Image 1 (cartoon, rainbow, N blue to C red):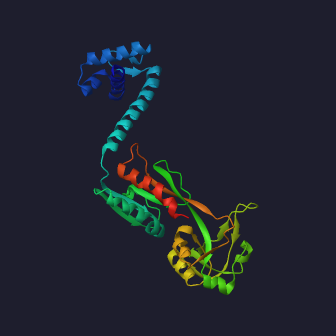
Image 2 (image 1 turned 90 degrees about the horizontal axis):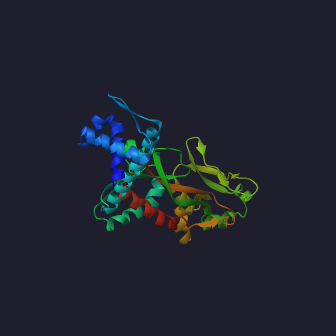
Image 3 (image 1 turned 180 degrees about the horizontal axis):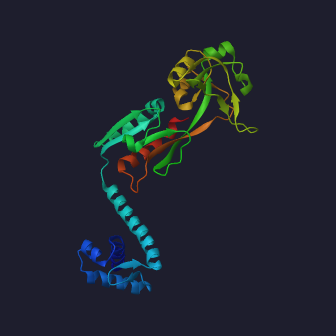
Length: 299
């Protein structure tokens, strides 16, 4: 404890700019501060300060020691904060941004279930496909699909892998046949996802080429995945959608997966939150729960 006390006094002297200012901030006498630094120097076997009658400045050894002391004290503060956070009940409002359909169908049901076991927790869920600024918009957490941009101010954790699958209704397949290879897709009708003047080309990883691009014939293009799924159920064509979106339709026989021997595209989903030395208990609870339960919905 005496060693730690000497270190805290040393750091205060450096940051206050001198022994007198440090003594005032620590409610000690200047003499007591000076003796503490002298004992620290004696123990380390180096001089930490250049001393004059008017001021003190760090030696090279003092500068080196100061930088490491800062790191050590910060680790202690983080440890104390983590211990304190662990004692707290999960409470308060948790604001989360998430993609509209993925959030509504997969994320929200998992998070809402937390309210039963945590009566002091509140959820404020925002469904939006745009990338929000968490700090500017006041969000504690966001769910992001696909590659993440490097951002030193953000933390991220992988919560699930999503797979895309090609499927169609039994009535469509009975009328037009079932595609057996990727080449067959070009002879089929597809319902294409697209926004403005762009559209999503169907791609598949292969052994010979990183991506095999296929474009079914189509006179239907729209920017709403839920509507695309609904039209597929009605027999309007083949669709290329996430497995979680078609899972219930497949289980009920309303849709049939095709090309199941072809490797699917897989992409990642992450939870993203502002960088902080301490994670709030409510944020940790939400992320841990998603990591545990979300992968079961992705097949």
